[in-house]
Image (cartoon, rainbow, N blue to C red; front, side, top):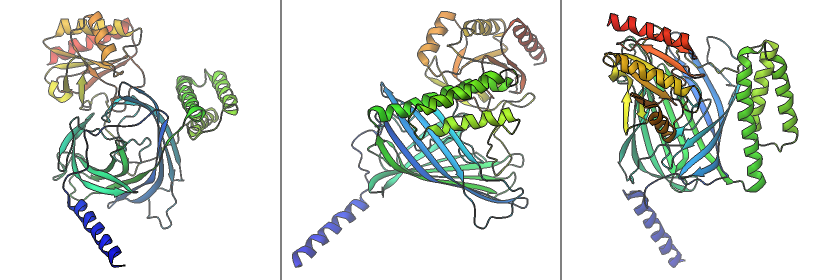
Amino acid sequence: MFTMIIIAGLGLAQTDEIKTSRTPPLAGNLSLRLQPCQELLYRGLFTEEARSSRVQFQRSYRIESRCLVLDNDKGNHHLACLTLLKQRSNPAPLPTVSSEPPSTSVRLEIINIDSKGKILQGNNLGKLSLDGPPTIEWGYLVELPKSRIAENDTWETTEDGRPVCNWSVSTTEMVQGMKCIKIVGIQQTDDWARPRADQQAWKRTDTVWLNPQLGVAQKVERTIEIKDPAHNEPSQKSTLRCELETSLVYPGQLFQDRKREIQLAQNYRETANEYIPNIGKYTPQTKALVRQVKAQMETMTQTPYRDAIIQTSKRIENILKGDNPEQVIVPVSTTSLQTAKIGQKAPDFIAQNLLKQESVRLARLEGKSIVMVFYNPKSPLSSEVLDFASKIQSTHGDQVTVLGMSVVNDNEIVRKQAESSKINFMVLDGSGLRSSYNLESTPKILVLDSKGVVRMNCLGWGQETQSEISSELKRHIARD
């Protein structure tokens, strides 16, 4: 008995020494270590509340987020991300402005991410909502620094049109039996400490417990606080808490069943999006599409990704019946993120120059008129659009800045086309601007005046488009 007590005492002493150690157990650089066919499943809770003289509101959702590794290519990961939101009933809800029935959101997106967690291509992800639940959640993927990290180390990550996020290493903690590296990311507006009278101030805090074996989060907690103009206390607050529930590799047919439903869901949504704007014209084709997909599902093994297929079918059925076509989750605040609108200043952003190793910020280009040319380098129209943009730069180079905005984040394709077209302007990565610039299709050209205000918004392409843009530019150059 005496010997056993001594051994237990030594064990406790060893544990205390580990707890007080100031060096995280890092053998090298942290990076993603996910393999093809591996699926991560996160489950948790999202809560939001608003408290002010006008609004008292509280609501919560159960969140389920899956991430399936479709393929790995030269260190990059091709991922399918599915997020489900289910509203919970509050036992004693606060008085609300309006009563809303429980709603469910299903969203599936395909993204490419490098070994350090940086999203390379996620055209439809947009930005994380500040005032509502995340319809697509990817907070378990953190952009890591290229160098190895230790306690108290810091690094920065950038997000289109938003302040820099400052990350720091805190300590190590046990989560679900796994020794994780705890990191904290803080992103806030410049006026958070002293809110301005003409705009909201906000602060986002992400606390992530990184699984060093996988390079992704074992646990995520995110808090977003919003202050109304000229108010020192937050009027809105949302909190997300979720943990990694399973990390499984699905071999052979089990993986193929998932991949097949993901591909069907993506193709179904894309085809439906082509028909829906002119549903009256394409009603027979739309109904045939629904029947075709239903027949396909009957021959397929059901997986969790079928929810995305069912969501598209419900959307189409609602539109055909003349009902509300979308299942919209209304945020606590009706204030939406800034988007590009005629007569208003264009949303600021920081984007990578795809032809040079540098970042470009829109606000720093003010002083000249700006022509933003959103295009898809894979489109047959792109060469003609780029030729027109080059002519503008050549003709008005002293008074106009032309920005090529590629909606495809592929340096090789962009560079080859730039060389063959002999373009004379910058080409930026515009793949992350779909939300703030309302990008549903390309080409799309915006004309901004010297103060950054949107003066023209042209969608589509033709001789008439070119003449209109040229005339508008001449007017603004004359004014400036």
